[in-house]
Amino acid sequence: MKNRKIWASVLALCLVLAGCTAGTGGESAGEQEGQSASAAESQTGSEAEAPGEPETPALPKLPEGPVTAADAEELSGYLELAMRRAEQPPAVEAAFLDSEADPEMTVRNLYYALLSEHPECKYAYDLAMERTGDGLYRITFSYMPYRTGDYPADFAGEEAGSFGELIALAQEHLDQAEIPVRITDPSLTVDDLGRALQQVGGGYLLCQLSRDGTAITVTPQNGLTHQAALDRLAEIETLAQQIVEECVTDSMTLPEQAEALYTRLTDRVAYDFRYYTDPGSMPYESTTAYGALKDDLAICGGYAQALQALYEQVGIPCLTVSGQWNGENHMWNLVWLDGEWRYCDATSDRGRSEFGFGCYRVTAENLWGHTWDQDWVARLTSGLEV
Image (cartoon, rainbow, N blue to C red; front, side, top):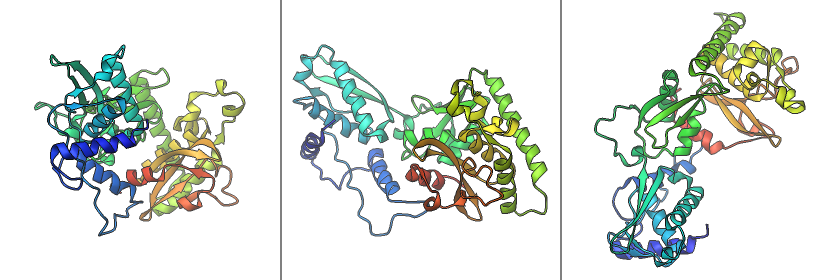
């Protein structure tokens, strides 16, 4: 939606009506998030923003009284400012809506377009609209409580203030269909919280943030019951334990254990080429650690989740990373060893132990042919304790 010009006009009008200037204003949650997002974009890995960087100007305040929106773009500007500030927009006189067959749907379409353009505002998860007696339109957003702090007084969710704490909470309570959670960092975005939860469940349990952000939902996959999915994850853990007992000795250092397990995985597990030749006949297990550890057959997701399961047994922090390899969807790993994060791609290293690995504990610059959201990886790892 092309609303930059009208957005600037709305900002200017709000500044006049509110009697403030961009760069001053209250310490609202919206202002804090704007500053946090700016800082996150300027960071890579553990690097912090350099001292002396100019601060992101604070958002202008919304006018307190009714406003007039001449068209959809002007109304969209008011809605965007309200969403960014996580506040309710003022009542609006919008004569153009009177001629619409479904005014609320028109407003909802503006809202959906804003979420598409500004996914960082997805904490505004719904809206309602009514026409007041004086002919004004009152639009009300529903905001996730973690963004506004408006949790019910009797809410008893467990606190999670980082991606690491969220992941740990989900892993600890996978036996529950819904895990109440109180997210304590309002700068975390809805999309990032959802992406962090993808580290949990092993392909058999899907963990997601609930619609209002007050719970983690846990949903079994591939037609399994919740208990059957838990049983399959337990089988994966047992298989990983058995392989560790076969490959690892007490005299090995942690890096030696890591290489021994990586070698075992890449030597023994074959790629399931039915993914290309006959995808309908390929079992779901080939996409998971179970296929790799039980059947010695997997595609990239199975390799990556198997390495994660193996390294978990010896206490090596290991994440899965999704992106593309030579233009195809792909999954690999990010591993913490010797005080640094390094990438591993067991799929591309399969069968290469005799000749030397090409994608074992390499930097991002040396992970040839791979593309992924490195900014997201930096945000994720900065929220983990290792």
